[in-house]
Length: 153
Image (cartoon, rainbow, N blue to C red; front, side):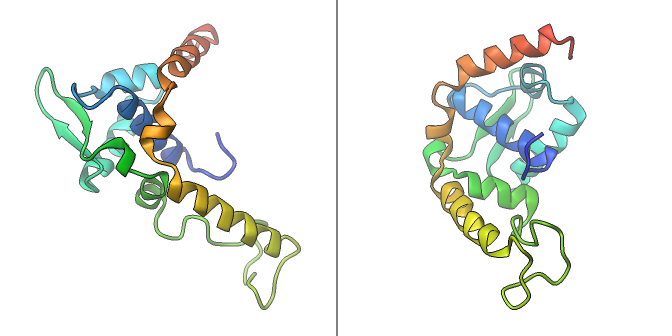
């Protein structure tokens, strides 16, 4: 699990990057995403439906159905995904968890965290799915192999 992201956000980003890496010609089935990325299928289903509801993905029903990006991968940014999953204020709050921490009453890390948040937001706003999904297919195969070796499903 990552330091800053919820499990839902991790899975949303991983699954949408996987879909982007497959191109946008053939729908990607939930079962395939779940198995390849080792994400529990019921949990993944909820995440994918929230991305459909937010108009990031489109769901096609039927035997050859699955999920596709609504628009080109180069037009979808991580910031968009994180806002959908985590809400508008996903980086707000004190890094150390102190209540009332703000510019007027800062905690010991406040100014450092404030600068780090600015850098993170800048990165998220310029990181699109096309750039991030390049070369992902080989990395996913490595991860899948590791999951199978470690005995995970």
